[in-house]
Length: 281
Length: 295
Image (cartoon, rainbow over all chains, first blue to last red; front, top):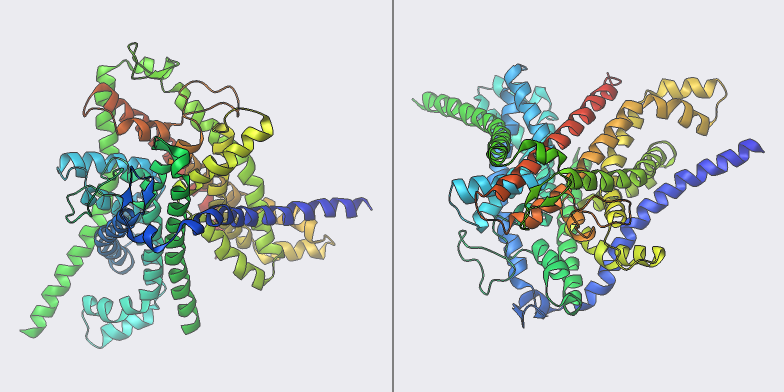
């Protein structure tokens, strides 16, 4: 009997924890979507904000986030994959590569606000890009770099050595072997990691706070040297910085919904690629 | 001729890849150097002792003081509160996932928890303003729910996926023979879990907790939006607090370039960097302990 009671308590703990964790996710989505979805309309997505941001849409914020993620990709993806190729295909186990690996692990643990400070000091001030789309995109690029390197290296390593040896034996140089054999085989894994880290970068706010995001801009950022609006910053601003917070609350719900849907979409694409790859293997 | 071109290209790219590797090293060095350089500039203009002993962070008023104490205590209070909630929840969930859930349930729950990790921090902060904060205010009968407890609940939600994934890896890394030995001695599932599997996975569980804590301490937007931002020593979880990250986020946008105040923000960032670095290194040390199980 005593045992039965103890086991019931254990049961409650285990099943209870799982239920609570799942409830968190479900209630987050429900709380935001139930009030955000009714706000969303074609006008909300495709229109500029009006009347001191109390009416109209969030088009410039959506466009800003997409452009920002694009610049992040331009910096982080080639750089990250090149670094992963070096670590998995060329590097020997010596003090230098151990140092590089340690650097990557530490970079992954640095708080995003410190990346923001670094972006401010390096891109905005030292390299004189000013607060701009470019400075913010580069900052987010550095932030997603360690994650892209780690996941890319992992999927490069999973390509069997035999495949490399076969291609080298046929007379390919190491570069040709990597380009024509190793990279294509590792591509689904690399792509999954890249998409997940970009989805994370798209939702980041702290690093763009002082590197280029602004409250309101009445034109689209046509040049990468301009300041820009972004979805996460727009949500932050609507929920804490606006003069009439209650008035813009529905718009905040709508913005949150659009942001979460965007991030989930990227995640689902990544899951799909991973799933496809598993079937293929 | 053709062969020579191929070989040259090969050598060139070898150097390109190597440079990329070295550049990452340079980025870490750059971040480190930037923090140190600006912190030194701060301590040349302000007394280092005040930074530690002064009980006020008050850069704006006529009586300027830069005491990191209240910010540090706020940061630790909110993160500890988050850990009190996230550690049991996270470890029990991990134990359930690896020991009790069937394959099908695992395949549904794992991506589900990963989704929780992908929700942007600003959306979690928004939730703190519109749902959890008002809820806390109602339960405790206070005016404003923007306080340390609100921040803790939100940070717990954000740290959970990290803790669950790493703890689950750690529990699964415990060799099967341990469990079989325990079953052979007549122990049941529960006794095996609590007396054999979890203790054996302890280094990995500590790693999970450390990495979750590192994430909570470094988080910015959630605490900025949900904890009220009063820069005084908090006396409890229902007080409004202001963390290091939130202070940087609020003040960096308005402070003039290269003033004492500007440098002071880099100095508190350097402290934050050292804390998260220490916690992450500790987490990594324990993570390596549990990986030794694997062949």
